[in-house]
Length: 421
Ligand SMILES: CC(=O)N[C@H]1[C@@H](OP(=O)(O)OP(=O)(O)OC[C@H]2O[C@@H](n3ccc(=O)[nH]c3=O)[C@H](O)[C@@H]2O)O[C@H](CO)[C@@H](O)[C@@H]1O
Ligand SMILES: C=C(OP(=O)(O)O)C(=O)O
Image (cartoon, rainbow, N blue to C red):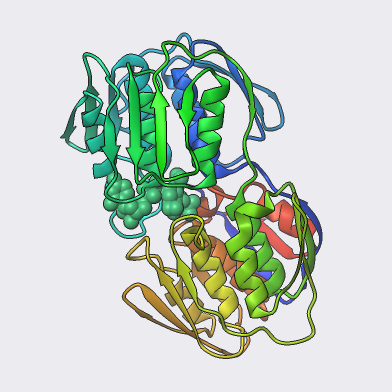
């Protein structure tokens, strides 16, 4: 883990244009999905973040051939892969290693995968993934922190998810796409990343119907062929830069976005008084004259306001008129940045799943520590708004999810540097 830090001198309005990268949460599912293929696949717009590098390293550990063809473009040949057990090591570095369970089960009918890492946001069980694998015919045990999966035969099943889990929905699509017969996932999650995974698998010859709704039907196919697929733009990266632009009263245009995916974020920014212009594939924030107003946020499943943007949005709300309530209905402990923001002068109380954010004086620079990925984004946002210099420590969390963040923010005029330890 790097000990480098970000040093930010705040108070500069961001200005200019930015191209949004491919989505982290899509890419981290698409890469494991390729294990299921019977031919090579070319994946484009893969974000240059720690999580995708770790997953490519894991595919190589399994014997896959991963070739970088150009920036963000990779060819993955899964044919030489074997069912290597993965109880430790790289799988612990990210949450999305849970997709290796569905993908390896689907291809090899067996897998050993260490319990995943990723951001600690309160308990993040995988009971719904396990329930679904078992329904498809797998025997699943948890032995010393690793999940062992084995199936003589995978047979389609009807699976009702107790909670509309993104990870479980995708994992069950992966496990079921080559199973015999039909699988139906009821109460499926509806996030755009799920649609992207279904779209890749369907381009490979899979038969997945209804991704993006709460009922997904998967008709098993014996083989998946090669194709080329472009990762969808990262709605969370885009939302973060929109919030940063608003937080500095900047003038920023984001290109390569699917504006529809950002509807809840754009709506809340507008409600607060941010000047926004949007087309189908771009969104711009323009400078405003009036101060921003408090708005309440309820993070919930798509198409609700994304939990992954709740933390950066909360930073913006420290500088608006009035008191705002930020509630996270998905996670029980996603406010770890709050104590750090308080050290910068923010006035916030957390009560259970709700943060009460009061209008504060201008934030002032401090040395702060990122506890998780979006807490890190929230602190960078705070640094951009604050008087003086903010130093953000534990940036490895941030680099799990934001490609070239220093270069991108510098390109918009921010005074930000990565300082080597
Ligand atoms: C790699 C990835 O794509 N991560 C995203 C994914 O995480 P992840 O897939 O982990 O999130 P889920 O949608 O599964 O979790 C949603 C809620 O369901 C609960 N749950 C989930 C599974 C389960 O088996 N049992 C259970 O109780 C979780 O604890 C959480 O409270 O979706 C989250 C919700 O949009 C995002 O914050 C993460 O950025
Ligand atoms: C929570 C997140 O990531 P992960 O699920 O990979 O920990 C996130 O992207 O905000």
